[in-house]
Length: 196
Image (cartoon, rainbow, N blue to C red; front, side):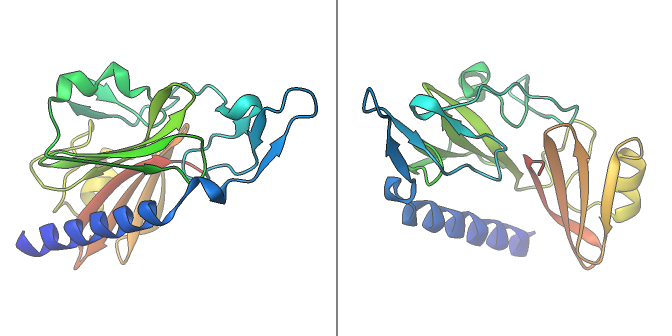
């Protein structure tokens, strides 16, 4: 278990460094002919959103049966964070950095057993990733760190499953991809992200 926590901390640290390296300068902007407004040309592959006029992302509504439950709330990819953040209480740590793909701040909320990453969508923040960090928390279907490939296939048999336990299994539904990374035949990482 200690090894898994070290890997999770290293992955989190790497993501923080990547986010810090991004700047708003990586977005290409063009002045609108009449009003001088800007539009971003970059789009985030991970979030599935496109930047549209006036620097705002197209409105997204979560469209998946793959959910994470915490604080008595269902949490989904592309969900407005105002719908659940208060119910989770204060995170153990918080980080924000200028978004590489959107106008605004990407944010990372680190709780004891899971991490929620967000992206800006106009005046609101939406969920871009959920990472489970410990075997104490589970997906809504009951998957947790330490399970086997057969366990995942029995839990997610009605979903599209790709890959194998030699490296990773991916479950897809709607706008969400649930990734299970394996080590020595058992899950050591569970992450929700946007489906491509």
